[in-house]
Length: 118
Image 1 (cartoon, rainbow, N blue to C red):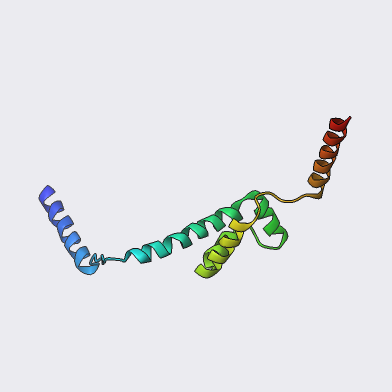
Image 2 (image 1 turned 90 degrees about the horizontal axis):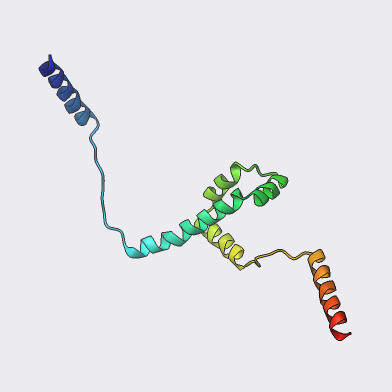
């Protein structure tokens, strides 16, 4: 019984390999191709993480973009668009400017100057 089972399995495997050959291609790639693709992938990952943040997601939802479609839109962008947006994001200031923060800061400076002089 074991011999019949083993022969059947071997025949099925032979037919499987004949019907669906396993082929692959391995080739050399140049270093400049790898280096050219790396910054684009990093920038795309940065944008994906950005659109998944809660505050950005709520702002996009307010503009009519669903939170689930935002990463798909990032994936659909060209490499040039991703690099342009990621470059602009990196050049933005870290914190937002608020008029209240500016007024409170000036008030604190005025109080320090007032009590320092007296």
